[in-house]
View 1 (cartoon, rainbow, N blue to C red):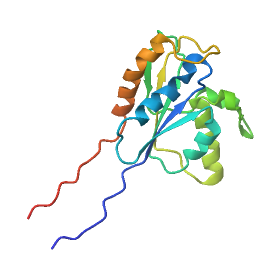
View 2: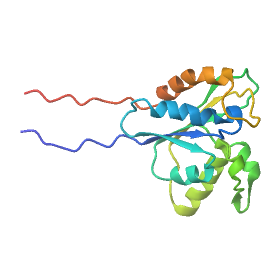
View 3: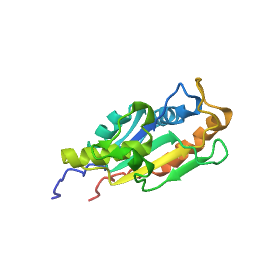
Length: 180
């Protein structure tokens, strides 16, 4: 006789595309997450277009995710189209925007740093907990001037960025049937 126990829930993972599609390469995260959403993802993994709704994202991150992968344009001085992976992302420069009352809420400046600063503030105020792992997959933009559409260099980096994100996801396990 075999006891039957429910399978444990897989850890929840959120892939969030951040950016403004009306500012050229700033739309990188939105386009990358759209491509990810077209692929089969492991159980417990959600791919969401957040766009410029950083405040919404901060609240959503309190919903019990183990891992969060943020996709965004990331100017770091490299060649346009360079894909970056920032493991164990922590709040950096966003602290400068945080005063005694908490982070400044400006929907046009909700970079991953600002979202994480707001998340810290919200989790302290609500008793919620932040994800255990936060990763940022970024791409060096060529231009974030007004205009719709990615530059050739950033568009060419999308496949690489999707592969980097997929490498960050939990490996799906297959439950084999028991043999007698």
